[in-house]
Amino acid sequence: MEEYINCVLRPKIQGDGGEITFDSQDGDNITVIMQGECSKCLILNRCISWIEEQIEKDLRQKVTVTAIRKKPFFWDT
Image (cartoon, rainbow, N blue to C red):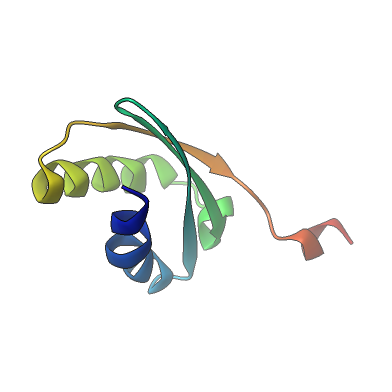
């Protein structure tokens, strides 16, 4: 799953200024860290639904994705 997220989904999300990082997987539950434009996006839930659909379509796995928004370190200064 980590390889799929990094190699297939990540470049697509980066195309919109976002960043996704695989965090963990517990059965059918996947946790990802969203950064870049994704960290402040108002429609992140649509992107998460799209990620779940892509995984189901390409890997034939029904999963639930949980996103953790993480702002860049320089936003704290």
